[in-house]
Image 1 (cartoon, rainbow, N blue to C red):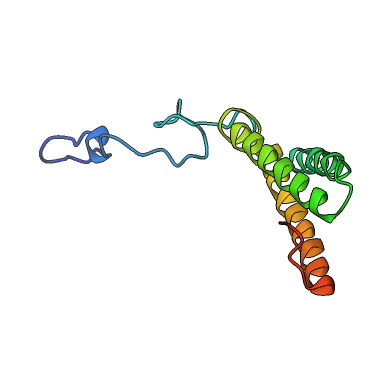
Image 2: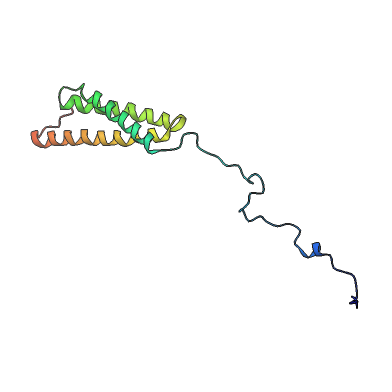
Length: 129
């Protein structure tokens, strides 16, 4: 006994869509857009090494001053040089190290400002000029 069909037999491939978007579970080839990666990503070790280098730099320059005036001006000069180095590192080098340098330099300038403020408050005379 056979079952008679009327009309043409439908093609199963025609029932499926022409193209399917892959789910992403199994990669179907290279990504559609390029993936850019940083050559020097910011890491904790980079920030710590930049901070340590800046702390040593500010300490060495601060020790050149024999009084509050000398300490304050040497710290300002050392901080400007350190920030210039941090700007170069941001552009051409390791941004993590530049971040550590900038953070510690700002802290060093804050300490120098506090020393100047305490001297000014105790003596009543502006110590920087």
